[in-house]
Length: 250
Ligand SMILES: NC(=O)c1ccc[n+]([C@@H]2O[C@H](COP(=O)([O-])OP(=O)(O)OC[C@H]3O[C@@H](n4cnc5c(N)ncnc54)[C@H](O)[C@@H]3O)[C@@H](O)[C@H]2O)c1
Image (cartoon, rainbow, N blue to C red; front, side, top):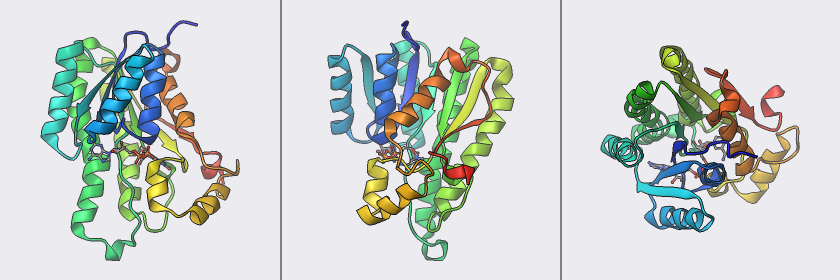
């Protein structure tokens, strides 16, 4: 079978853990040059080395997506080194578990900066490159919590809901340039994000909230990302793919 992303250049933010890390491996195995962006040099360089060892192509660029300068640098460096950007996955994100009235203003800003403002900035700098190419796929990692509420997740709900509507705006705005923009809305997925925030008992209960009776795996989300990045989804834009074990069908 031909490689589905042969010679495509793909930026994956938050590529050093969980869903982003799974995307790095899926994409490099399909022939993409992957640029993984994240804060941890140790993790990033380890994944980069692992991909190279497998015969794939990956480059780690240290990036804190809450810093506009870092994002600008990420996009510029990618362009300089690889001349193009075919896929952007806005995946970096943080969770939060606190009722809104107890939340500090600074914490609200932190969640919104990392989960939503970074999407604006990554798109702002990537879109001109994609416009020149007349082609590109932007994938925003939203959530089922961009559709339905969840106790303790006020800022997170707002950030993911905002991301879903921003996606529709971008899809309309840049369709004429051949740029497709979609979200993936995962249900609860077994990643460090979830494991950090919730105890094993709660995780078990969360699994039962999904009609399929379990949590999802990062690879099950990466499969959807691969579809949206590839030519197989060439008529898909401005929409969401729910990878949620039936959670939002209820
Ligand atoms: N795990 C779930 O249940 C779930 C469900 C729905 C959506 N999501 C979304 O999927 C995405 C990936 O989450 P995950 O579950 O793989 O979690 P994770 O914690 O394993 O990965 C998140 C990644 O984002 C990075 N990140 C966080 N802040 C950053 C910053 N300021 N700059 C650069 N990188 C930063 C982290 O370092 C990490 O690599 C997130 O946007 C999350 O909201 C996760």
